Length: 178
Image 1 (cartoon, rainbow, N blue to C red):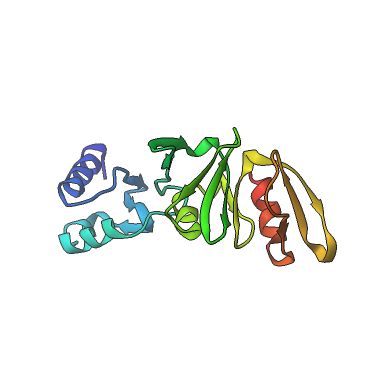
Image 2 (image 1 turned 30 degrees about the vertical axis):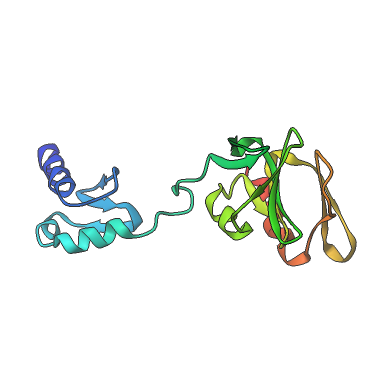
């Protein structure tokens, strides 16, 4: 397949309904996101329905769009808080709140699970049922009883941040993947 044929194949695919901007070509084969492989002779036989199905598949975790700010209401005003300014999210009295690095606290109308799915997993880690912490807020981590970890943040938290022994390895690898 020459250069012109490859570009024509890409243009033919872009005319179909695809929400992706990237198509990879390697050794005369077309690779679409989510490891969909098209040989040149199969391209013409592929129906537009299959392409539409491929465009609806979920993107991998590292490509997913993450939230960069949260809309909050405090003192009769709406304002946005950038995700980079948030030290941690936590649950207190069945209400989800967030604490910023400037020690401002805001209440949110989302569950901690919803927040966890909307922020970057490389920036935030779910320590336990009550806390989701920002990597930049971690001051130190020390061993605790029964193979648990005790996490100290740059600011005080209402509760001790303990990571159970089942999550210890996951947490340490998350911290090491910087």
